[in-house]
Image (cartoon, rainbow, N blue to C red; front, side, top):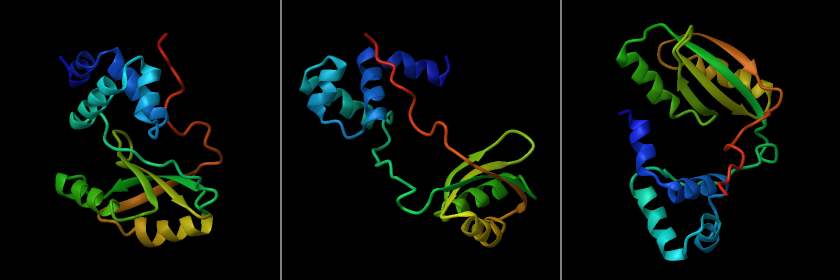
Length: 163
């Protein structure tokens, strides 16, 4: 049985509802969360604590308005490494963690090695990060950039409440 199947079997409909509601709004008071999922407050708190303790919920965060913060430029950068040994992959991954402009980093199975989501003030700031920081990361051989014109979907899945 796969890990995903085991996880699905361990979660009942209340657990899945709690996760869905918190994914939409992590600031829900427990009383409101309990009401939405059809439980009283205490059992809802116990389930939520268990979901946190078991690692289903990794944390809570604020969704920021990047335009107001002056960081609305998004570029996706393909990175090809000159070396793909485990040591090289780890060195690249460790270095990426220290670049604040890199919002996401995914190892890719395909014609390149990593896909980065890079957020900056504008194209000039992106160009500087690419030239001075990303290109200087360990084992970077070359990069390709795709600039996002608009985020059509960027967040949790749409509501899917069970009746």
